[in-house]
Image (cartoon, rainbow, N blue to C red; front, side, top):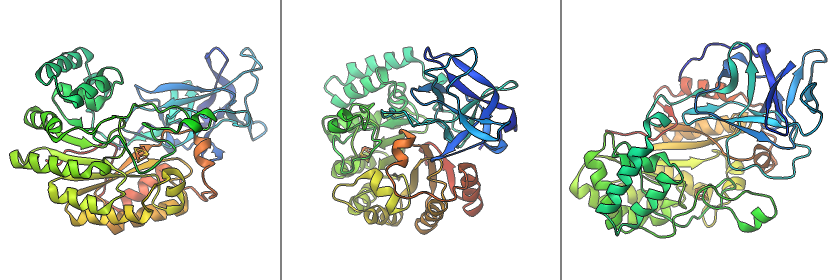
Length: 437
Ligand code: SF4
């Protein structure tokens, strides 16, 4: 984790945008952030300059909150001299990969009658000395996912070459659209012949996550309770031949090759575990190189064990919480239980897989006392090798409304990271999957 230069929170001002999307800093009121439903000033340890590659968003009908030092109150900015007195909206940042968010934007949701699309909204403010500042830290020093390494001219040339070489391969055709139209960096890696390459394999899922990027229920979209999915799900199951035509040449030419099932453009690969097993056995007949990884909800323990036996190397299990009461309302599992996920962690370790947890982090929830205790226990009990800290992409208010729990005493994500490092010095905390050598 990098150590940013300290920024004084009392020098950081709240931001507001007008109807036309022009952004202004408040001349007096200071920046606030939100942890779940609670708004507070960030601490110096939480503030960094806004990282390059961040994007800014507006939150319509949600006036931002600022800290009025004179009255010592948190107040909504609903009018501002020289800016206007209606339609003022909140501003949020979306951070590039590798950054773990500490606070949500502090805004008033009172007049919001829509659901925000699936992005990870992050607090942002303005400092005269630094410019835009946010509340986050870099948790993974792997630079391979920086936009500068993805030259679209080279990607298109790679796409043309692969399509010509494998005209019948439906998965290469699918991934060419992922790379060129959806700008999926993992798909681009395949056409550039390096690093982590995706292998989407499953058109279906046995969960129904509120924030699923590849499927949202029509009826919920119509009611305004969710937004359309941002990724199109694959609509076929690739054959082993199609998978091998991607994986084997990639392992041969790529530096640090990782082959990953479980992508944003599919359901859950565990429902195609038999195909994955067949694939892994075939790969391992040819080569022992390359890391074979599956990103999954780990809902079927026996399938996890089978994949380990077949020659897979690593598993990354996604959870939003180590507690059943927080897991169920978000994942809405169909035909499996939270206990199955835990059983899968055991099977993964027994089967010799590298075990990563992909924690879908929400400030004010993931760092609440009970959540932290459960997470630490889970890491300890199952001897987790890596913890990936992923910012959960969802409307923050929609997420908090899922739970009866008030999520008491959040310690702050920054302190959660400290606790993890103290208690598990060997745990690899990061953001990306790893090449295991
Ligand atoms: S487990 Fe993954 S694919 Fe399945 S619903 Fe959840 S996010 Fe979507």
